[in-house]
Length: 161
Image (tube, rainbow, N blue to C red; front, side):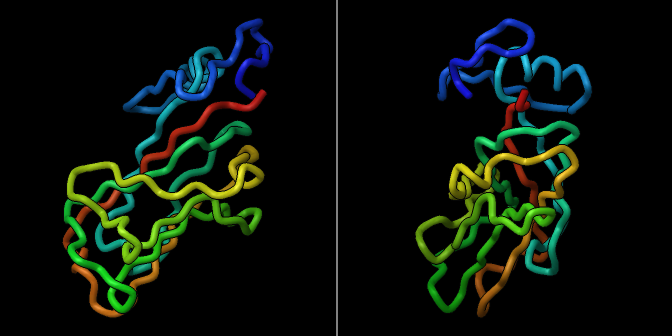
């Protein structure tokens, strides 16, 4: 999409030159995102990611997801193949994995930092209006206890036109 002219006659920014907005999400932010580039939504997922799937987000407009990350109050320490978390961001409407992270492959969650997830193929990064993005976590063994840790998902995207 980068370099294409929008319906407003503006050009979408090249990758890496997007404008990111933080904070509350509203209709004006959708308009700004369409004009200027990427917007960000932060979704609190609650306590203990491993206790069940969490509905993270449903876009109001068709969009392209550019990045997803997790913020945790607790760092996962020295996970291995027997003691880990596997977290997927799934478009449950289409049955596709949009992004994932596996804490036994060097992608530990770091306290108070956005830990990026590995994005899926380009074909699964486009969401239709009202597609449901869900965070699904699997806990294997006894990795670092996240029961008392607040977890949030950070989703960067731009509006498709």
